Image (cartoon, rainbow, N blue to C red; front, side):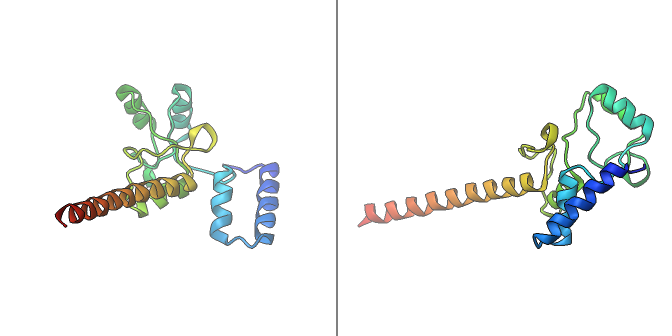
Length: 152
């Protein structure tokens, strides 16, 4: 897949701007990915065409082809199952996998283009989940304190 000169200029400009801001290479790559400036090979051309025609998202590597790419047979199987995969950037997927989060079952709302899940969405999900656990612990501690007062 060839990258257009215009896209290359956008990549260079954004990389330069972010490096002047002191961003790390990892931060720059995440931002480039969030801006959808990095090329993606996740499906054969025929599979991508069919998925696009059917409105399916194939952003997740999970096909039966080389390196998890989707084949046309995979897309036909998804169409027959009526399954719509969540859209997620590769960096967000990797981050979620590292944290042990199942993207397909987790209640993560994507804030990217067309509802695509970004790294920040995964981080927000983790924070919300942590906040829920903290609230539960606080309630338990409060219940224990109430019980102690009742005993006195």
